[in-house]
Length: 307
Length: 295
Image (tube, rainbow over the protein chains, first blue to last red):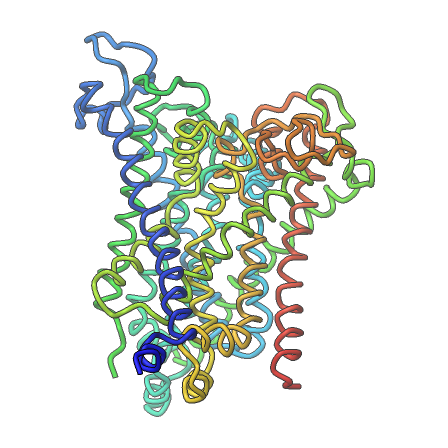
């Protein structure tokens, strides 16, 4: 009797398998979560050491202009002013996004409104190829074409924010385009039909209806593009000139947070102030990327199409 | 002005901008292939690189790139599959799941250089693995996990609900349904995702500079003992990949033919990524036809 009862009430093989499977799958997911937490924890603990152990005020770090962490400035504080890098990063990011947006809008409109079938077949591979080209290759092409051309036209070395912007422009273009295509597709069909039924031309229906309905999507797309531009390291590092000076024009050598990180981490000793200052830059990068994410969520919450 | 004329002008401007983008792409790829391919030869692809002399190849770097790619996929695919299955099948709708989803999204948008630096801090410095293939593969795994997880979840959830219900109706457990019914149906999508991520991994350099290192010790391709320092299979040796090599010789290379070598290496890199992309589509379609018996 007991034997039968035991056999009837115990979990079947399938159930046990299901439980194990669920646990394994959960552990995998948990690992990813843990990874994110530990990235933030480690980078923050290293990056904050500049301020807590190095006794450098956050305000000085963000606003001072001279970056030379190995040396002590006149007033006895190590010169760790990150302003040149912050300005550099923001200027290449914003400029490339401004430059890329009209192109991205045109690409997306062409694929969804003007020639949906042909445009899609032809431009989808174009976008995929642009995404697929590795960033070092962009950097190499920037170094061998864009920098000499800028040098020939404007003089100077050719390295600088302009070169960085042009390289990033091509890199963020596919990101913005493909995201914007998705949000244009999400605009309900009857919006367009209503506009056309009122006698609007195609451009009128695009400009007055479709574009306006998809503004949140466009903003999200641009922010994603900016996040990519902000975090891009090698392609920018190769063309920006790597001089940690406050850039006074678009063609003077400058630097970004990422470019200083890639060149600097290997040349400083772990645990020293110059090294910690670099980790503070990494922390800024991390926080900015988090900020871009929050912004996208905020916009996304506002701009959903509700049926 | 007449609305129709404005319509024509707007269409023309849009087409013009699209044309410019297409032109940029064509010029870009054309430039890389035309300047690069003449340097690509069997010798170039197989001989080791030179630090000071011209005539160096990219043999070791090419091998390192593929080796690192395979290791990374071996580590990241099981984890991504598990996470994808959990999020698709088991995850309850509560704040824990939500937090994890947000975390994955944040991870996917982190700059790769930060991921690389984290790998450097944790594995190279703390766990003392040194600049090694293993550290590099783990850093690339971090870089690859969020996107791969998301695309696996998308492929799983693009399988029609009926299939799932059919599986459950036959008395399968959820695990059996996922593995036996949904996974095969989603396989083409998953494979495409893997190959596309392979293209990304292959071209990634920022995450590798401080994890897999920037030096390529001489390899002896007759030595297949994984514990010997000159063996190509050794996990613990530093390994400069093709993408890192291009960056390195452009920023601090001193060999006389640096631009020729990097042009050739760029062409190889582009071709590899192109092959990954094309084969992803081809293989996806083919397997879908095989598995589902559709024409």
